[in-house]
Image (tube, rainbow, N blue to C red):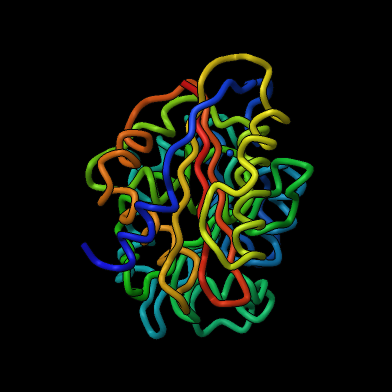
Length: 295
């Protein structure tokens, strides 16, 4: 057993308690310079400025895809994939309006995109989702898919379809859920309802671990009491990444760590009535993940 896996196994002991589940998780017209094609509730827009304006007006999710440098739309695999009827159907059935904006890496309009997004897609081609559909998150980047290979996360076209049904939530929450759902063993912990109380608890504990720079179930008894309404038993799992990794590499890394422990994987792979995931980065450049589930 490697020292790192041994640490995960010791620190990520699962604890059961009673816990409440109360809320669900957050988890045209043609314009100048705009080419719009409406298919049910998807609007394709070629200008980033127009796309943000339309997404805000329509209260839609904005998917932005940046092609590799010097690759035109006709030869870009993501551009062509997002045109497929089967793929678009997944988004149109997601009950959320969508705006698609596909950009050339060389376009000057790229400078308008949030620096956070560019960093998270590894300063290269990639995809992001900006939420204009839900008031608490309006204008925030909530998903990123870098197309440059990382240490653990490598882009696949199947990841695009996963974006359509990720629950409402922050970038870190949705990235953890994406990492769970894309795992080859198809774990089922996110098949139930994404619960806001559990998401907030997972976020708070991930931040606490990051502040301490130590993985573990610190204060779990008190935390469990704060969220418990005697609904039923719950389980918590924790993990930490290797240092100096980006967000998606760390999310995939943490899920892989859970996969190496039968006890943890039993919790992550089992179906639950409700769940919450989140992850936070410490000043030591290590990310700390938390998952909390209600049976």
